[in-house]
Length: 212
Image (spheres, rainbow, N blue to C red):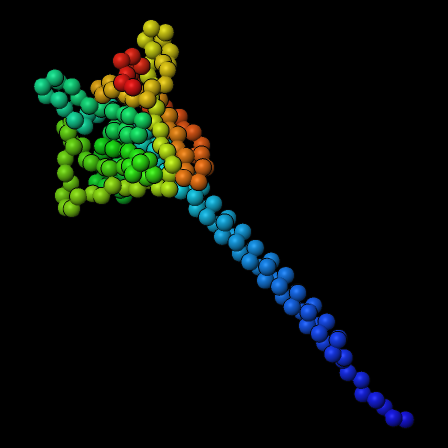
């Protein structure tokens, strides 16, 4: 008997090729989506980690702010220990050795470049005044960038009512520390950081006569 060899027809080959191409397209699309998802996840994780680090720094250093003078007005006998506006804060707190020489440092926290960056300048404090450290000047430490707005508010005691007073946009009683500081930050993409309210361990200032 004659045996005839049978192969694939052209139509079958084309159909198989189309199915293979469709499978590869689906596979590559799934791979791209998974890669994009992983990348977005890494960005979100990095942003959240940065957020926690910045909030942890501000919380710990504000909470441990000390009633140590960083500036003296010899003419009026006024010692500056805390000053604040909606976008700046100045206070003294201990700095770990790995960030400086240790001991009390002036923390000059401020929003710069129209509020898009939050940074802190650090200066050593001795005998009620800031002093220059040996070596080259210390550059500002960047805390966060890519921001839309930064707002600080302050709260002291209401001596008439024996309770906390209202929130204020500024703190002008430089000889005393506020009892609480509120920090509100919004990122440029519209993401709002969790609001922070920090209680200062040595805060005992009055809410009266606070500058707007």
